Amino acid sequence: MERSMSRMMAVLHAVIEEYVETGSPVGSRTLAERGDFAVSPATIRSDLSRLEGSGHLTHPHVSAGRIPTDLGYRAAVDDDLASGAVVHGSGLPLVRADSVGEAMRGIAAALANMTHCLAIVSDPVSQSASISRIALVRTKGPQAVLIVVCDDGRVESRKVSCPGISDADLARVEGILATLFVGSDVSRADLESYRLDNAVDGLVARLAQLVRSSVARAGDAPRTSAGVRFLLAQPEFREATDVRPFVGAFEDDDIDFGSLLTSPDGGLVVRIGRENPDDRLSALSFVAREYQAGSGVGFVACVGPTRMDYRVTIGAVEAGAEQAASVIDGTL
Image 1: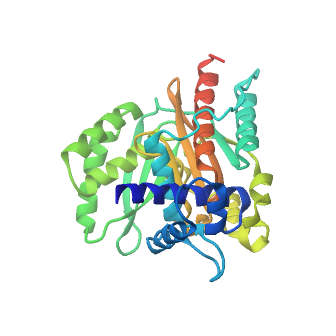
Image 2: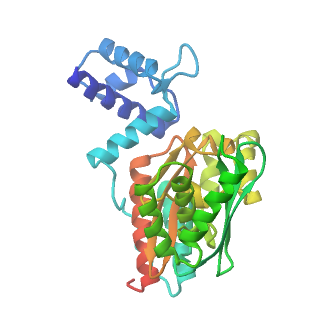
């Protein structure tokens, strides 16, 4: 059974690699001709059927080959990360520049050229700001908005689902958060909210995480981008109707980059298709990594179709984040 599961994962990887390269559904004959499997074509067909039954593959037409689903990509990415198959560095060229802005533009262009994705690089946001106000405002039904105001002028807001929580309880939670965080710099807010996560269950701990991500992440930092032409050249997006939803979301600047491209622990973020919180982004995948430089935090990200070479893109984004940190710290 273990050998069969290992082979099925190898088949899944092979389908993804072929589909990423060609953009065409992949059949058992194609996989058999690759020569990667010492089994019969009938066994490969059986594995493909099982992968389709488990939701990792699908097929656009009855007679067509298979294509990966979001679940299939997720399984392959998790397997690559666990096995160390990600191509770290990915040959991203070293950017030399006379200014931080020029370096950010250079890193974005290099990432876009290497991955054929839209690349986004943010400037670092200072973590030395203090939190001057926290408000928790009921909007409609079980919804509320958490508002965090910093003394450097930043105002962050996050939608919160709080079913079964009364207005009195919201006021109490607001008071707890204010006691913990108002007057605290971001680094202390990080520490206090991690302690709270370990000590308290429920709404307070969840909102403490949102406070941390609001003030300690780079969502509203100035951003440099490159590679829109690569994104729009993908076969998935050749029709205007295919790109209008997410292009509108980008142009309206109503995407919450702070929560979309960062994680509470500052680690790697990979959001695939419908894993994205906004339905307009369901045809896209995001790969992002934060970087820390001096007292600030920024992020480096690539945006592309779900049919993405995740191994290369993850490695390139991580290399870009290392370069961005080095530029800010003056070591390049």
